[in-house]
Length: 462
Image (cartoon, rainbow, N blue to C red):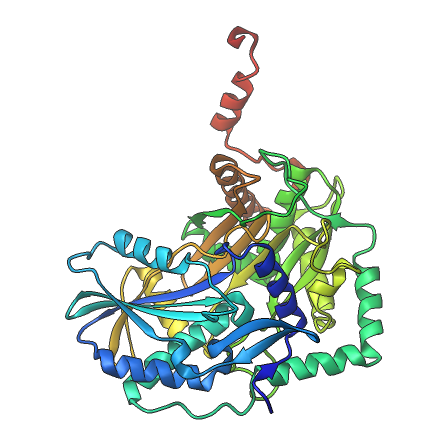
């Protein structure tokens, strides 16, 4: 087999977006850990080389050919370890700025490749390991599998075993599905499933530009859900016989309905396609966005919204094999009317991701943890901003839940998104308190805030 590889449909879409805005960091994915204790730089370099050898997507470049875009596999030294001395920079906030600056550097997918690694040396016993990868070859799970492989290889000082399957197997499976009769069945489902609804939108501070952006500008607002509300939310979901994800999704759809006014609209749900024997250890772009219709009336309750969300997710999951990029029609990567403009997902580390689970739980407690003989601490920085109008990620641990709202700054001001986030937390509390309450009757702001808003319209202010 040669060095050139075919792309998945999702990769083709990301390649198009890269060529449209090559200087944008919106599709850069990061993972960073602070490591306490002595760290052997030479050993870390060996571990990085072994991991890059294992996952050939990390040592790839991309090119256009007569047959379309192709991935070209390179040598392991395509991903060197950069080292920067930052003596005395012990403040977490300052370290986060270094990490974000590294992650925000655009990739040259045609020359540099898809992945880069950085070691920040604060002191002989204090380091930060950062891995930044373009979304075209990774996803959230893959990024932590990559960092986990790196620490495991460092701890053992041996190369990890070869993968039983690779990303090419995923691409081949997708091609076989789309070449068979199942393709038309899937397309028929999605057409019927999404009929009579268009992409949900929220009132923006600025009009949408008719021209594609040169850079996908974005920012992030986040809020930790009150700790006392988290167990009540899980209990409310259990009583309603829905998942916590369905409850939080239904409340977000209620927020879109209340602010945007639409009764029937579509919201996306990025979902892993990492299934089948041997795929759980594969690093790659293994995500598809499910398009979920929401339907509201004047009497829809929070409980009904959650049940509808769960039912729609379950139906959509049975048809996840049809790539989201193909739902845009004949021009799948240049449509000005995409299937969705907002997405919602929940990140909940599981037993198959021990590193992510450990550092997430430790971060919720404000501590570090031990992994592979090292004391490690999560460094979380904003990323993947500006891809959608609003991109909501519910970040979950055993004891905490954080709502992260990434948004397009070409459309929204920070104050607007902060208000949306506050309203979402308020609606979530109301849904937990009374799931039978009508969505239409829920207050979006506190009484004091409402008085301030109403005061803006008083005649004495003119």
